[in-house]
Length: 128
Image (spheres, rainbow, N blue to C red):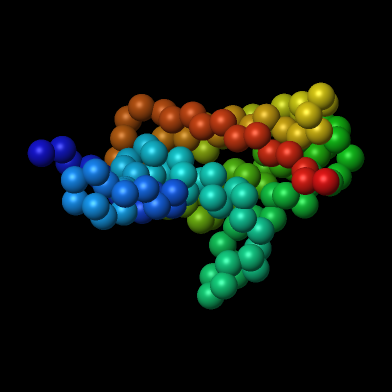
């Protein structure tokens, strides 16, 4: 039997092939999905939990320069440190992608009960 430290529902709501229940994400996948959802959620967007999210998307409509990149990195780090208790040592690197009008973001962190650092990549693009 495999022991998992963290488990979350898979928000794609896929069906487990054997027990026909909703599938789950475990450990690294669960935390990565949670971080992605937090970054893509604006404040006051979720009913009954207006405090979730960090309004990162509003920075996508600012002047695309080094100041905005720095603000984006800082906002994502603060958001994760404030709302995801399962991680520590959060670091974000954002790079302006001029050809796509967006930002390539790499989020580095260590899960609380794991030794290996984890990296996830997000592409943040303004919607026209």
